[in-house]
Length: 195
Image (cartoon, rainbow, N blue to C red; front, side):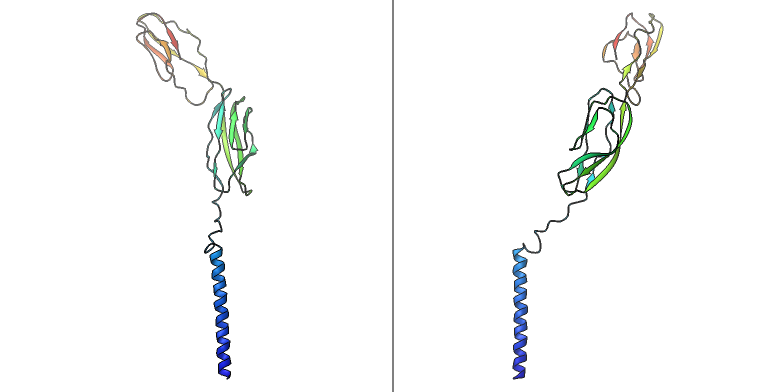
């Protein structure tokens, strides 16, 4: 009799365990089979723009900042530093306007995603003075069949200057080098050029 009760108790426990297993399996299936309804976390938020373009005083400027990861949409702000006068940073990451001052400007942009995660990056934006040709024409008259040399001058801009003839003509025998030097032996009269 006691053996019978023990067997009945084991059977009851096994039945309860089986019922619990079936209930767990039913819940597992109803929830999408293994938690597939739980979204993985998004990749880390990062700013993918590494540098910004240079600008020039009085010239329209446009630059876009880009980010990846996190949870879109993104919102951009100027966290620290200064943009050149005439330029602004929009909430969608666009820098635009017409700069009115020259110099080197360091600023830190911050991007925020819809989960309030933030990321920052510091940029340097250089703005050059307007590029102007300062050589007055004509500065040195050429003499027929005599050596001729003239170095063109400019101010503003950024980096080394590269010169080229865009219209008009030079006397035969006179050429313009990329460094702005006119030289040669004048083979005809007249000088008419635009650089």
